[in-house]
Length: 258
Image (cartoon, rainbow, N blue to C red; front, top):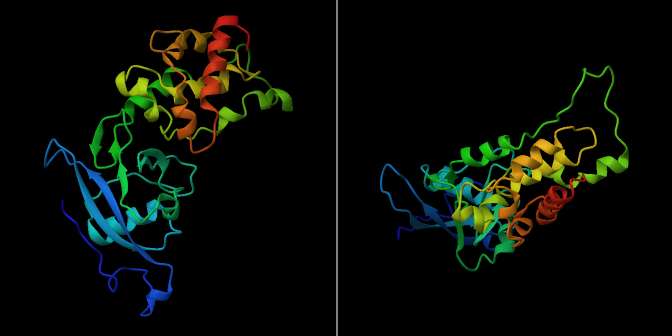
C-alpha cells in the first residue's frame, strides 16, 4: 500500500517553526482509489496530512489533491453543506465531507473515505448519479396545477406549508438513497430521496398531481420496497425524517387522503 506523506515544512498553510505549540496533528486518510484506465479493481491508499483537527474532511481532501496527488478525484462545490455534491462514506457512514470535522472522527486512527454505495463508481470518490436523478425526475418534482394560470400568487396557510416543510430541505446529495440496503441490491428501486421529493409535492395543498405521483410510487419498484431500516434517516445530513415521510406516502396510498 503506497503511503505518500506531506513534509511539515513544505505543507501549505502550516505554522511557522514552533508548530509543536499549535493544534496541528498528522492524520492518516485511507482512501479507496479506483481508476478504470489503470485497473478494474479498487485499492486503498494512505495519505498522511498535517492538519488542524478542527478542519473538515473536505479540507484534507483539498490538501491531498493540491499537494500530494493531483489525480485524486472527488466532487465538491459550495463547501457550506447545502449543495450535496461531496457525499461520501467516511469511516463507514454516509456524510458530507464539508460538514464532517476531523476531530469528530477519532483522528488517532486512519480515517477511511470511499465512494457512496449502490451507484457505479466512475473514478475514486465520484459515482454515476444518472440513475439517482432519473428516479428524482420520474416522481415529477414540480408543482402540477390545472386550469388557467393565476393572476396572483397562490396563497397557502402557515399550517398547510408546515405539512411538508421537512421534505423541502432535501439537497439531493444521495446520502439517504445510497445508505439503503434495498437500493444496494436493486438499483431499480426509486430510493428514499425520490420518495422524499414526491412527498414534498403530494402534501402541498396547492398541487393537483398527488394521485399521479402516488400511482408512480405504487409500482413494484416504488414505496413498498422500503423495509423501514432507518438507514436513510440516520444518513441525512439535513436531519430530514426520511423514514417518516416514506411511511406517510404509504399511508396516503392506502387511504387516498393527503
